[in-house]
Structures are given as C-alpha cells and as structure tokens.
Image 1: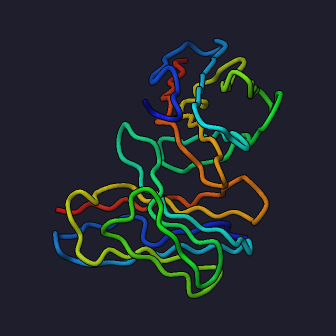
Image 2: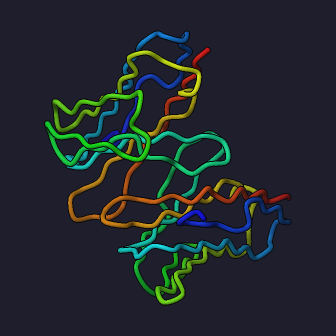
Length: 107
Length: 112
C-alpha cells in the first residue's frame, strides 16, 4: 500500500464546476504540501499546511490530522486550472509523494 | 532572482554514455534535492544535500552520483547511462527550518 494515495487519478469536469481532489496518507507527518504541475512540466507549490484550512484565490486546502486526510478544492474551475495536482507529506523533512491527480477542465 | 534553474532542459544519451545535470539556486537554500518523475508514479528522491560538501542517498540512488561543492550548485551524474534512467529529473531546494520546496523546470533525459 502506498504511503500517500490520491483520488481520483484522473478527473474531467466542465468549466465552472467545483472540484475536489483527495489525499490520504498512512505515515505521521509534520506537514502536507499541495503542488501543481502544468502540461509544460513545471512544478509550483500551492499550499503547505499542517492543520486546518488555507485559501488562495479560488483554491482551498484542508487537512484533518486525526483522519490523515487532506482535500484540495477549486471553486469556479477554469480551463487554465487543467494540470496535475500532487500531494506530498513531510516526514522528517523528507517529502513522500502521491502519484498525482490529472485534472482537465473543459470549456 | 532566477530561483532554481536546471541545465540542460533536454538530452538524449546512448546506453553507456555519461553526463552531468546541473542544478543552481540563488536563494541561499541549504537543502537541495534531486528527484526523478516517471509516468504514473510520484516523484522519487534520488539524492539530497543538507549543505555544502554533504550529500545523502534517497529512495532510488543506484546508478547516480552527486556532488555539492558550492552551496548554490547540486550536480547529478550518470556514469553509465541505462534505458531505465529515461525520465524527467527535477531539482528542488529549501531553507533550513522551512518545509516548502522550490522546484526547477526539469530535465527530460532519454537513454536509447
């Protein structure tokens, strides 16, 4: 069993839909990192969180430490949100990576 | 402030050839990392460094060597490339005490 599991693996939605990507982990962690990888390949950090909730624009990330679960939400999705979203958990300053969720937003 | 840069962006090697990938950061970060990314898999840590002159093995170190002679540079070497090393390689860095890693644009390597 992978230590970090993301669901779904692939997600296609229409523009404007509310998007949820989930991340579950089995190790004890210091923090959880959400990143975005665009089709061009570059990886950008979205959030680093260790409790509660963070919001940046249309993106919201939540984490439940007791349940070992985090979600990334996108409100009013747009085609430019199409990317791979990656969850990684921080265990002793090493990141353990999920395999990513490929999101496609259709106009 | 260029952040994290990687050289080269693309490379094709024949089996048995050697090459070095360069990662440079101008943020004065102590920690630097080399990852590989393969289709359907998460990023896997190859080697990392916690400071100038120090390196350590990650999850998949076999077939690779690294050096950190200067704080701003982290080199990844392939002494004898194999087709299994065809991958996209990412470098990242972070500050001591901070969790967030900053990534370079990646190097796409093909070994034929």
